[in-house]
Image 1 (spheres, helix red, strand yellow):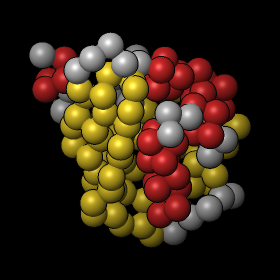
Image 2 (cartoon, one colour):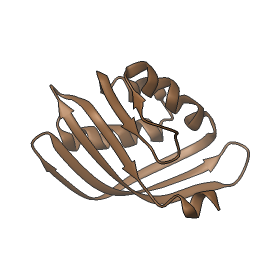
Image 3 (cartoon, one colour):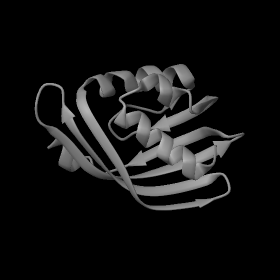
Length: 120
């Protein structure tokens, strides 16, 4: 998998609310950084279980990428995360995603977005 393909795959996993598929994209020691999660998720199991509650809190999700840039094992994308919360309401925000690849798997994925808008 290339960096471009990994960014799209990460978004599709969120669209499908599939923590198992998301974790399968990562190296055994891969990391996932999300501003709404305390600390960095480390390793396949941590990526899976660290994202499972967030995905379960959503009833639908659509992630679209805008500008993307990839060079070798590095990728950057801007996107839009749009979702409906399982208990009602919405969670919508623009974001940036960076991926670092190793042997066709994600070694590091880091998301960046303005949490002030989300946390009140």
